[in-house]
Length: 158
Image (cartoon, rainbow, N blue to C red):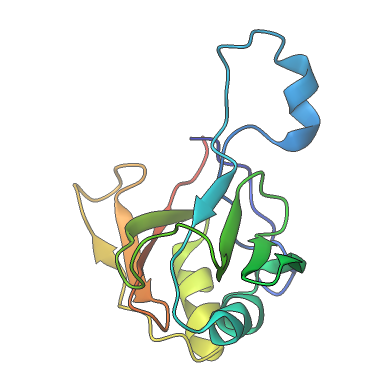
């Protein structure tokens, strides 16, 4: 999974996750390189989930469209990320609350955790999941309003 160096907290781009950045994709001429660009998240209340992700978690709303009477697609992307979150109505996304373990990768977990807690996200304390100092071994967790479980992983690039 691709991880980009993150900007300081307080700026809009504090959560990044996904495959290669969109601008770099043209350089990937080999068709065996494919990115996971959308994470579908099943929710009961689309408006409530949209508000949670855009206002509390801080992701950018790309679009909120109704391609048909029975369908609504809301796509949101963390600033600078190549991977988006999609919620909606009339989409085969599964049962609300059934998604566990989507990871948001950040460089400064303590700062991001503090920022999310300050935005009223009920987030766990930081947990050390491996030997101290091991890259990628610090996490904290939160649930969205529907009970989907999210992990926030600290990964500092060398």
